Amino acid sequence: MRVTNQMVNHSALKNMQRSQSRVSITTTRMTTGKKIQKASDDPVVAMRALKLRSTCTQLAQYKDKNIKDANSWMDVTETSLVNVIKRLTDVYDYCVKGANDTFDSTSKNSIVDALNSLKNMIYAEGSATYAGRYIFSGFRTGTDLAFSTPESVKGVSYDITEHLDSTNFETKNIVSNEMDFNKLNSYIADMDTYNPPRDGQVTIMKLAYDGLKEDDFSISFDGKTLAELGFNLVTKDSTQAASYYDVGADEVVYIPDTGELVFGEDALAALQATKDIQVNYSKDNFKVGELRPDHYFDCTKHEPQADGTIKDIKFTQPEEGQELRYEVNFNQFITVNTQGRDAITHDMGHAIDKISHALQDWINIEDTITKMKALRNDKEYESDPAKLAALNQLIEDADVELALKRDYATKLFEQGETTFTNFTNKLSALQSDVGTRMNKLDMIATRVKEQYNNFDELKSSNEDVETEEAIIDFNEANLVYNASLAATSNILQTTLLDYL
Image (cartoon, helix red, strand yellow):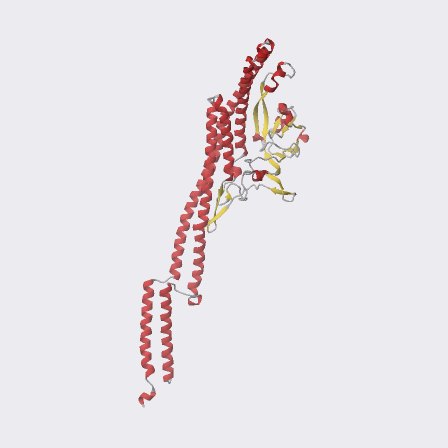
């Protein structure tokens, strides 16, 4: 094969260009620290880089955002649960003191105020937020658990469906024929009939709310109406307060004012084994601090609009609950929320109200007796032995009423010890559940961090060059390039003319 000078020159220049290209590549690697600058430099490295970068990005999302967000959410939840437990414990402490009858007359008023404040604080925890989201509201994180502002209750009404069962029957102690100080003179003058006080018991079922509408009410027992079961439904308004708990044997009395159902003996015997009691009722006069029905019951909200129309919004409660789940690792999720309907219930408020109302009744009859005794020194009674005798008899009756109400309040305090212990235990179980999930999240966080470090190391190994190796490669390429320059310069200088 004949080799010409042009072929030699062309080959030398081509090889020198390759050496120069190698110098350029090693220089770029050394200055950037990366093995390749574009996919075509090394398709295998490029493909691996895409996969490893994607994995590292996902792990960084889990490590730096999802896990931290989930942990913070559960931390706020745990703090709120602890606050509720503390408030319930405070109520329990009052129950212990009340059961031991250690309250004096002057402290009972402050205790009523304290109990009401504790109830408000418990429900206020339902408005706890994390990053602007309500933590106890399930999927509807933009709506707080309780009505928190006057604007939130303005003009709002609900049609509510509440499901109860036989466990919701309870015995209520009542005192009939309460003394009315305003009718005292009428009692003495026999203008108003007065009967001595007496105690009794009725079986009731307490609905979630009081202050209900008299109409738009229905009730069924395992799908059957009272009429189909042979019993009568009687509705009593506030003008019939004195006879609220006078119920016929075959009657069920609905008291919208107190939100109670009172059962007669025959009705109770036939209905107390019912598995599903469905009650439909309406309420429109909500107060600030009351729990929103849409977080607890199937209901329809009637909300007034700016143009004067009413917007109907229907809410249903899924049996599986409303779990907010965060992805904290590849295909690994954790539930971050605790639902308010499991933690902060209407029963807590009812139990506190029951005690505070009984205590208030105790206070009222004591005040009545004090005012009645003061009348003994009034000239009207001092000068009239008959009136004074009638007054003294009424005072004796009032003392009987006081004893009954004091005994009733004391029993409620005793029951409250068990009731609020159960509430506290339930909240403690929820707190433990949150703690368990937080511990699980800590283990996941450790694993994710390890995964991130491993994949970050693999990514670096795939893309990055070792500094020492880059310098050696550069020096080697540069040496070859300089050698090629020297060799090529000698070849290009010699031509055929040099031998002629």
